[in-house]
Length: 630
Ligand SMILES: [Zn+2]
Image 1 (cartoon, rainbow, N blue to C red):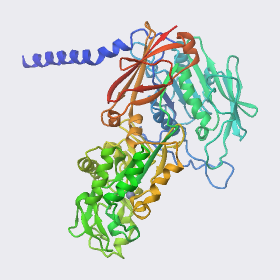
Image 2: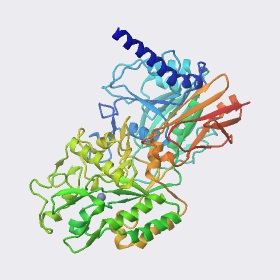
Image 3: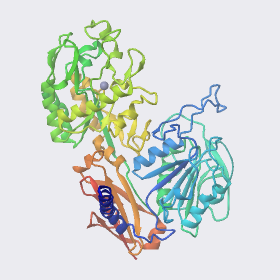
Image 4: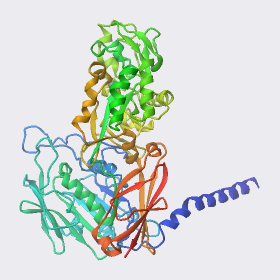
């Protein structure tokens, strides 16, 4: 009896759940997505063995491969960076994706199709290297997906050794050799229309790049040339499937702005539409250390903390005048030497051993004001900015100012830089979570960025500091380490100061509150150096990186519905601001469905035919509905 009741309850609950969660989607992404041209908004990246983490969680820049380029007497060839770069690019644009790795997975039709045989992805990015570690794969599945289901296909560099893939792209690849000939666009194709030609590489060290030499088969359109050789192509199939090959060196191709833009345009062209974020004018300005204890104990870093008046006059006022945000890495706990324990930072008032007066109570008032006015954003600089173990040899508590106390290794928290070893995972996690909780209590806001003091961190896989910070619930590891999420961690982030990522700037004069205590008037000069920039909050950036977007068609009504799902934790910044995305359509889609369209955002008509879509504030689910009118 009891058991039957339980089962009944289960079925009732289950059907209610189905009704609540499945019904709205069934309504939106209707049954008849036509094969070919009406594609879902999600990307499948397929790689070989470039993801070094066997657990498929941490995406890092692989180490040097131990190979010689032929140029130097050192084995200076880097590891395979291509997958890392792809992950950074797609995350920074907010374009949703999944990853298949052919060193662990068997290529299967249902990786591309749902249970009833409809495409799950609008396009595939093919980045499969040649490696003995790959499992046996039937590459004709890819041909089938493009030819019969109209899924788009974008392939990179020389990751096209498979004959099926070359045939699909309509090229025959001979090999690659070094070339520094300039790349130029050719014709007036949608894919290259917004690319500056010749293509320019970001500033950086000169490198020796490979160029593929390919032959073009009939029906394939060359879109970029490098010297005598085609370096990018496009091809269309009657199924609605479109393929793009973007050539050049797999490690360095995305140092060209033009090839980054080409990848993004290729996503638009193969799917037919795209919703993405770019960061042309954005700056994230960061300052470290308020609340830290090291400035009381470390002789070369000794200063009195900022007081309320300095904060008001030299930080808040200029920030307000420029509608700017300063992102501050705060330290919530202070190490009290006399009591041999840690304590909350902001009620500390004392004179240090060098004779300086520390008044954190006054400083706190200034920081509170700035937070209330929206010009300061609270980020987490760990818990104490000091070693967890201050007792064991050689011991910090009670040590002399000119001896142990002056060793900088004591003032790091997530790597034991005094004893040259790592900090265990559990201790790190406790410090991260407690740092977050204390800052919440001290300032009334949740920090989403985590930055280990003085870069002191642990690097082995289990103690990996960025990985643990993701586990603790942070969304970004600062300053420039990268994305932290439940889906993945991406370190060694790239492309700052380009459309792909905001420019990171340190607060003048020296990135720390220390500099402001010495030369407070220097702080505001940043606004003369970057007059046109928008100084934004870190949490806004984190919100976009964590937006979970999806899209699909109501084929009968020629309606495209894009859903934006803003997580209440990672996207909390969107409670206080509207979000702005770029909406881009390919030429063929507009030709087919009509140049004119109407936009509804969250059910309200907004203007049509605009590149930027503004979504009202609020976390949770939003929708953009696009109706095409022939
Ligand atoms: Zn610091």
